[in-house]
Length: 238
Length: 120
Image 1 (cartoon, rainbow over the protein chains, first blue to last red):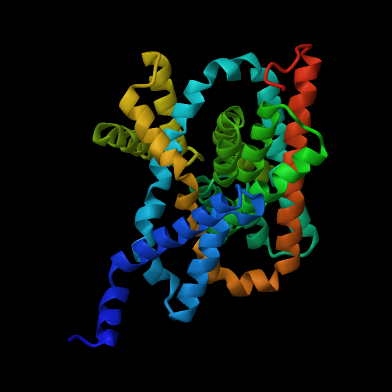
Image 2 (cartoon, rainbow over the protein chains, first blue to last red):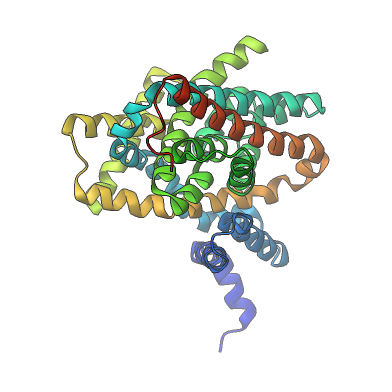
């Protein structure tokens, strides 16, 4: 029989282990989330990240080793972003009917997200590279990382802030919308998509079809608007 | 399935090339999304296999954020040091973004004189 320690040494250097742990951690999160009727606070991404961080800390695995396995999942973000064209196209009639209010609300929300995030971080004394990393945090990960790099931020920090923002948007967003008595599913979806990108969209899709489509649209357009406007605005302010 | 996955990758690849060639400040996958969207407009419809692949990929969208989220490990020290600015900024700006977007959308729709057709 092979010594268990030797098996661990072999497995921990192969991508198989961490690809599997990523999927298992996510499935545990997704199951808990469903078990408690999609309660916003039990977000599956949040649960999976907590599980994985605990496992990596306990087994003293560094992130680079983990990422060798997890990169296969991470890679799919690119094609998934391209795939957003499909729900966008499917909702084109509904979108066209309220195109002007939708685009105006989207640009306002997009600017409000980036400007308030950067202004608050800067006022509270965050370092310039942290401010630059935080500004694109409402944009979906691969795009936010690209913007952050252009602004002089730390892309890997941005990735983390994006996830935290998405979880916050998906958890606090619905509660705030209820408080504001917003009942229009288009407005609810749009708001969650602008503030909480893919994680918000995933949440909206589970709750209501129209909200889901508008959230997906908001995520895509917000990425586009922020990617174009923020670097220009940044050059103008600094 | 394989064809539509390839289509998505081709769009992304063309997007990356366009971005690099013209030095556009937009990430490649976003250009890929625009290209696919234009393609669907020209074709006037989503082919069934593409619809299936896109739905499959997007229904597990939150899974795709897990590896990047686990990257929090890399920045534990920095986040702990800057906990207050980062925490306050994230929470407040998220609430601001939700409120501004939703209220603006409802307000503009009301201004345009139509009742929200999707309101319950």
